[in-house]
Image 1 (cartoon, helix red, strand yellow):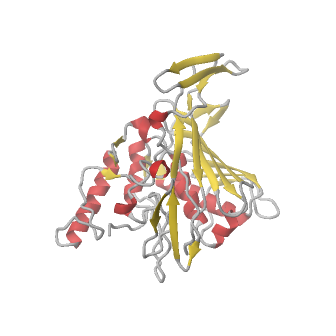
Image 2 (cartoon, rainbow, N blue to C red):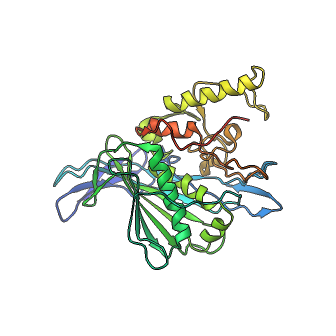
Image 3 (cartoon, rainbow, N blue to C red):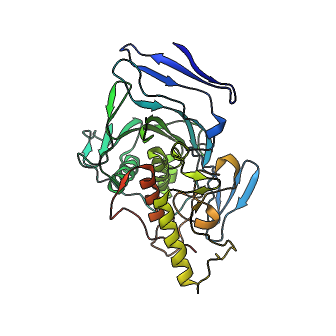
Length: 375
């Protein structure tokens, strides 16, 4: 139906459409500079050489830590959160967004992927693969994965396991929503294995593709992984961390912070995550004679969660600060496993879990989190 809104200050156009059933919706295909650093994720490949790796993003390099950090700059490429609830037909209430989320290859660690425990799956084929999978019990938080491309059962198992974990972490239904004539309960994610750019370079892409009006909780999302890379990273034990990290972005980590007003400068201000961060600071002080200064010289200040400020648009504002949180799963950097340790190389902390509560999700009282402390 043509142009609905033109914002001259940002040169941002929103167009109005009506589909054959009479449902009206709005969308935009331009990047809005007002929210250009929200909700996208890109991870750059760094070669692993003798247990170390270097990171380079946007022309500025940061060398890996002595523990073998493989810096993976998760890059916000700009999302476009323009949209509106349906105004005609049956009133579809999905807020459509054009979100471009890019991930690229990471270095390896020793964490191994595990199989899923989901409740619903399509009948497996002779090679053990399925076309779709739904995690979570009926009435719980359900993640429906649709597999596209040529998957192996082991690679699908990583995706299933990530969905299972998030369905145990996020509890309680969120309102159903209609997207493109289909009722969504609670999020549908397309997971595609396809040829992208060969070995190395771009490992995959992930993006929320429809947000609910009002709550902004994602209803649909897509993840794509390079068929030339996926098995390599699976063999290194890193594919599960990549998938879990990206699935957290799909359900809203960083991707809807701006919509909900959860950031203030280089800080996350959601009260649930802040409360967990404050506990981490207190625990650190208790273990260090009252000092709140980290070994790298950063002084911890309670009251808001520090966000990443380096790496330019690749990493800043959409992840926890690497300098403060180091190996948390939702920093912009993936760590290698410490030799001889059975602890996760990149733990999913209670602070990260609590940030999902700030998005509007109900979180389990015994969530699927890992032990985590500041160091």
